[in-house]
Length: 241
Image 1 (cartoon, rainbow, N blue to C red):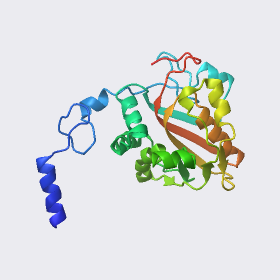
Image 2 (cartoon, rainbow, N blue to C red):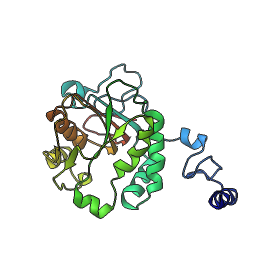
Image 3 (cartoon, rainbow, N blue to C red):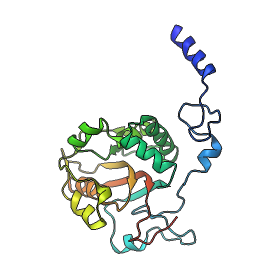
Image 4 (cartoon, rainbow, N blue to C red):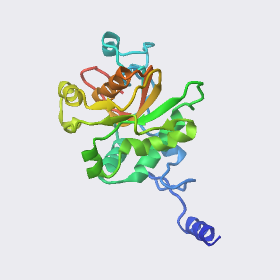
């Protein structure tokens, strides 16, 4: 009772405000409706790599994915990698801002459909190598993915691991990124016939998600989809927002 009274008093004295414009909102760390509408949402993207497609095209895949199919059965991104989303992701990864993870995860949960299929879909945040996890203290993809458990997805962290300590992808070319993560993941058991939903923060060339999807399918997974918070424009694909 005392705790509830203190909480109510705190809310009255310090009402929740929008993370961007500071207008009153209904929840801490959230956004007002106007600011949420102004985020760099992606509308029409490639189902293989989530790169933005021209609004006039009816194609489901970009030319690159038509020529070289992705191991992902579907790939979706919420935003273009632009501010303020890009800034939130940087704050999450390098400044321990877990409130950004909660906000991004809630925005993701608004878009990802509920897991109502008869066949269960397992939620799998992209794993970190234990050395990177020890340095950062948490897996940002896991923190983003947590709100999806409320939509019927089971979260399992012990079915796949990253056993190879790779260099930072951000400093590498597309070809170097593919080589950097080759063989980096391993499944811990047979995944015969299982379905997975991968979650990550940023997609650039897709090297990490594709390698993880190949690993899961080599272990028997039937279907692997991915949702990411933000997608960069890959000049190699010729995409644009």
